[in-house]
Each structure stands twice: as C-alpha cells, then as structure tokens.
Image 1 (cartoon, rainbow, N blue to C red):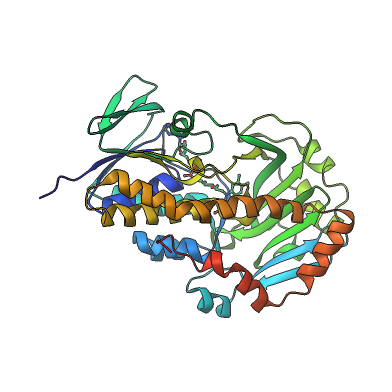
Image 2: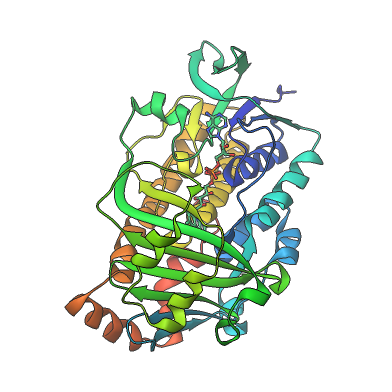
Length: 394
Ligand SMILES: Cc1cc2nc3c(=O)[nH]c(=O)nc-3n(C[C@H](O)[C@H](O)[C@H](O)COP(=O)(O)OP(=O)(O)OC[C@H]3O[C@@H](n4cnc5c(N)ncnc54)[C@H](O)[C@@H]3O)c2cc1C
C-alpha cells in the first residue's frame, strides 16, 4: 500500500482550510500552520457565486455553507451621481437553475467556520496556531518549512495558502512586487436597526461614483448589513485592517447622492485596507511546493471572486492529487496548468471592473448605456464561463 503523503498547508484562511479538506479527502495527512493565535476570519461579509457552492459541494460542506448564507434576489448597480438604477441581474430561481447553485452572501466567520468544523472533524487534518512560516527548502524526498519560532517541519509537499503577502510565494518567485493601485476599501457591519429602511433591499447593491463605489447587502439571517466603500487615491501605503478615518471616507464620496452617502455617516467604527494585486505569473509551482488562493493570484474584490477562486483551487488541487497516483510534483504542475488561465482571467477582469465601477464623464455614459441595455439572459451568458465552473479540470 502507498504511504499517505504528508502535506503542510501554510495559512488557515478560506483557501488553506479548503485545501486541507480537499487533500485530506484524497488520503493525504495534512498539517495546517497558521500564524494567528486563533483560526478565524475578519468581521465582514463576502459574496459567493454558484461556482463557490460547487466547490463547497465537492469538499463535502455545501449543505453547511448553504445553511448559513443569505439568499439575495438581485445584484443591482446604481448610478451614485443620479440615484437611478443602471442595471440589475436577477439571481432568483431561473439563475439558480441555470447555474445549479445559488448566488449568496455570507459572513466570513460563518463560511470560515463551516470549513473549520470540517477540518476539526477530519482525522487526517492537524491544525496548528502561532506558526508563522518564513520559508521552505526542497529536499531529496519532499520539502521542509521553516517557521519564525525556529521549527523545521518535514513533509512530502507544501501548499502556500498564506495570502497576498505570502512568504512561500516570495521565495518561490524571488519576490515579485505587490501592485498597489491606489484603491482603498473601508469596511463596516451595521446592525439591521441602523440600516436606513429605504435601503434594506434583499440585494447586493453597488453605487457607482466617480473614482469610488460602495456596496451593501444583508448578512447573518438579516441581523446585520455589510458595507464596503472603496475609493481611488494618490497615496500609496500598505495598510491592512487598520482603523479607518470617518473624515477621509466622507470626503471621498462627496458627489454621491444623499440616499446612499448617508450610509457612510452611520458606522462608529471603520476598518481600512489598501488594496493590491499582483501581475500574473507563468509559474507558481516549484516541484512539490505550490501556491493557492491569494498567494497564487491575488485580485481586487470587484468580481467578488477571490475567495471563490481559492475554494476552486482547492478542488482542482485535490482532484489532481487523486489522479496522480502519488506523484505530487506532477499533480501540482497539472493543478497550476488547469488553474492559471481561469484565475488570472478573474484578476484581469477585476481590474477592468474597477474602472467600470469608477467611471466618470463619457466612460460613465458608455457604462450606463451598455449595462442598462442588457437582459438577464445576456448577463447570464456573459457569466457562464465563471459561474458554470467547478474548479475541476476543464
Ligand atoms: C474588501 C474586500 C472584499 C472582498 N470580497 C470578496 C467577495 O465578495 N467574494 C470573494 O470571493 N472574495 C472577496 N474578497 C477576496 C477574498 O477575501 C480573498 O481572495 C480570500 O480571503 C483569499 O483567501 P486565502 O485563504 O487565499 O488568503 P487569506 O484570506 O489572506 O488567508 C491567509 C491566511 O494565512 C495566514 N498567514 C499569512 N501569512 C502566513 C505565514 N507566513 N505563516 C502562516 N500563516 C500565514 C493568515 O493569517 C490567514 O489566516 C474580498 C477582498 C477584499 C479586500
């Protein structure tokens, strides 16, 4: 009988936990090394498309994920300068039956919690906290990781799921630069009572403005609303999850109609992120070491697909490991080949969408005219490549 491969997963976010479940389901012994003191996610919402639910189904946690999600009826784009609707995409029954799963919104802790419960219940997954991975070495029969505390852990393979500032990626690529676009996101979660009644829509609503946009949707069984406001700035620093500044956010949305802008006055606490992605690379694999999720293809959030892609990656990785009959290096190579076009299509499309959301002048008029003329069927056709995917090899 073949020995069970021992795999180290660096990072216990949505990508890392999904990878751990996928690989453990394919007879690997998985150890997840997470730098934080506890496994968890930030307090904010996330949108997940049918492709993510396909991935969760493959990992065996689709029902648990669906049970914690909120099912919105529409994705709406509003013109923030006039308050008029530009377009909407219905995501009700016809959408669900076309794509085989819903479009939903969910609190990140709920999604992460579903994955964490599955990891804890799995005999072949070990979860280890307070282990910051700082690098790796290839060995004659596998690889080893080094952690900040001085531990050296041997394995047959390593999957770097350590996010946009991945240490595994830094070593694997020789350190490619984070691409800072000058886009900054502010996040807050409002109790439902604080959400203005005229905006309590069962939708993911996007208000598009000049060099800025904001998004809101219900969460946690309609007990809260998620709010994300994004703007472009010249100042490029690298802050992540730092306290936000109310004056800064209000000053960036001066041209947005009061109906939407008033939302920005409500939160007493904002968290602020400077957003970045990276240029696509041809290779994110080094023998039995590979990358997954944001470590491999960090993206702007404009397609709401970064986490969905991480879950799809996990499906593809597990599938290739199963097919490879113990040859991990060729499984990782096949995984990369199967994921690279799709994941980077999301990265590049997200950049383009950022421009669409922040359009001004003639670009804004073109956007409103083109999107406003589309039927639901046309939107569905445009999105077939994305929502019809499962993460499995094409
Ligand atoms: C404002 C905003 C809104 C978004 N909205 C959506 C959305 O609606 N839908 C969607 O699909 N995506 C969305 N995304 C993208 C999504 O959040 C990410 O793509 C996703 O979280 C990536 O998951 P990951 O596991 O690859 O990385 P991460 O979530 O970054 O997880 C990495 C994990 O690794 C740990 N770690 C990091 N370094 C080390 C180390 N050296 N050693 C050990 N552990 C380490 C971290 O603590 C963390 O737990 C959004 C992103 C932003 C910024």
